[in-house]
Length: 245
Image 1 (spheres, rainbow, N blue to C red):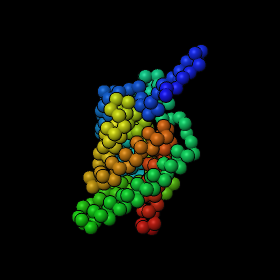
Image 2: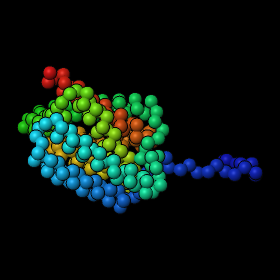
Image 3: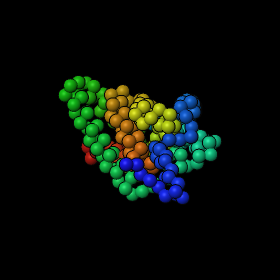
Image 4: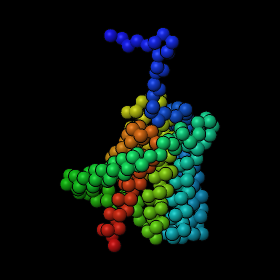
């Protein structure tokens, strides 16, 4: 039996898709990725020149390189949000809720557990590969070597904000409206994994990317994937501190 409405009452409007899609499309997203890669290259060249006068192992040089590389990630998202007139909402910078943040923290901890299980399985099947993966992880953390508050600021605050703004707020959202969730989440996760240049850690990094896209899709706020990223990096940093006193 079909539902009827009073003759003077219009039928309810169809609900719009609540997905985190952005007004820019696939072409604009790819241009943003290319532009960001060129900015990264410019940072590398500039820091290479700076290395001629500053010790590459110094805290100043390492953190200057890190901060410059991370900041390049926010250029394309902010530029496209401004050019399209979509503003911060298109980047997921709205609906900040404690529930979304707590869910993200939980998912981040689960993904860290997945990484540990993956590394253990790899150690059983291919010990040399597991050793290389562990070396990759240590190298990533040792780049941050310095005062613990500074390390926490870089790993738990700066990296999650800039990387989630780019990979989820810009890349995933730009692909989501045209390609659907499955393809958009997979591609954004692949870009995220490859950008870290960690060969044997690619699968865990890809899973982190999928987890971040999934909670973003669920909660429609960047707070959720940001919490995933922050929790994962925070637990990794804490584990490193406890095992390397």
